[in-house]
Every structure is written in C-alpha cells, then in structure tokens.
Length: 176
Length: 142
Image 1 (cartoon, chains in turn yellow, blue):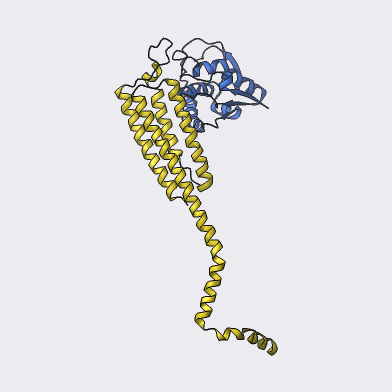
Image 2 (spheres, helix red, strand yellow):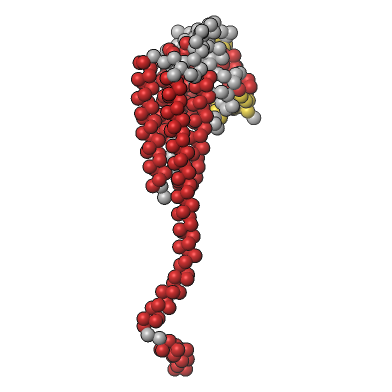
C-alpha cells in the first residue's frame, strides 16, 4: 500500500504550489468550460421558443383583427351567406393550425376556447331570420342585413371571443 | 371495407340550411337523398359509412344537425356510432358539435318520439324499428 500512496502524493506535488484560491479558480474555469455548451444550448432554445411564441401571438393578433373587420363589414351589410360561411371555415382552419402547433410544441391547446366561442357565434348568426331569409330563391337582398336584436347577441359572443384571444395569447406567452 | 360519402362531390359544395323549405341543398334533402340510403347500405353489409365533410364552402351548423340528427333518430345513437365515421380535418370542431349537441339531443328525441319535421314529402326511407329490423317507411309510426 505504501508505494501507491507515495505515487499519488508525488503526482499531486505540482498542485502544492497553487494556493487554494488558484485551485478554486481552475475548478470554476473547468466547470465553465463544461457548462458553456449546455447553457448556450439552453439559451438558444429559450430564444428560439421566444421567437415562436411571438410569431404565434402575432398570428393570433391578426386573426383577432380579422374578427373585428368581419364584424364591421357584416354591420355594413357587405356579406352574403356564402361569404360568411366560408369566412368562418377559413378562420377555423387558421385557429386549428395554431392549436395543433402549440399542442405539439408547448403541450398547450391554445385556441380551443376561441374556436368554441366562434362556433357559438356562427350558430347564432346562421340561425337568425336575417341570415335564413337570404336563401329564399326570390330574395331580392342576397346580403345579410342584421336587425339590432341579432347584433346585440352577436356582440356578446364577440366579447367572449375577444376575451378568449387575450387568454390564449397570455397562455402562449407564459408557456414552458 | 367502407362506403364513402364526400359531401362536396356527392351532394353540394355549398350545403344549405336545415330544411328543404328554407334553402336548396338542405340538411333534410341531404339526409333523404343520400345519407339515409348509404347508411342503410353500410348497416346491412356490416360495414362503416365514412362521411367526409371537408372541401365544401362551409356549413351552417343546422345542416349538420338536421342531417346527422335524423340518422340518429331513425337508427339510434348506438347504431350510428357503430357504423358511421365522420371525417372533418379542416374543421374538427364539427365532431365536438356532434358529440356535445346533435347526438345527445336527437337520441333524446328518438326516445321521446319527438318526430322530426319534414317540409316536403319524401320517398320511403329506412328506419330501425322496435324489433331491431330495418324497414322502409314514408313516415313515422306513433
């Protein structure tokens, strides 16, 4: 056993000339060198995720603007029944795309509640007498002209949709 | 094996409202012209009917409720779930709508014998009777 102990001692001899502060510095440097690639990767991943989250929130913001624009145009009697149905379909496709992506990336169904609220608004709109009347074969007015009573109901649904957009953006922003 | 219906090619790119009296290409028309017969074919052969909702110009919810609701009324929810698959890749929320609204509502109507409204007379259509046999009828027995 003695020769082995002596051997270790002789190998550690150069360290004897270092102060404990030097040894701590060397250890810190070594750890930094080992950890740098790891921290770089984590930092890069966080930065990439931040960019993705910003892009998703930007997309949601644009779709929210689409709703506002749709409502303004609907109130200006600019849309016929086919346009309204295709509008709801297209916006649902966009929201579903975000939902799938956010679920895969962040384990978060970001737009489920927006879609549910939007579907409720579609039911109210398409079941309204004003919408139904545009399907009559001899209907002179093909564009949907909403009565105030229907507008009031639509607005309450629009408020819910708007809230759900804010909630979704918040969830994406703080998702891990 | 399965039997397929593509709404956009087999019926209309622009599905209409609930009843024939309301619009062209209605849910009532789709049910009586296509869905009822195709479902019976799948049911009698022990196969699946695959109903593809994609690639139309969009649906009024009432079209989906009326057409698939009538199927539940005439065949029961259990048989519909056994022999019908619905594909809606573009708008998956139609499946949620069916599961949360149409299926329970129309199954309840079936149990309570709350007869569906018909706005024109139709050719006889297939219905599952209380004995578990499918018969062709042009109305509902009380």
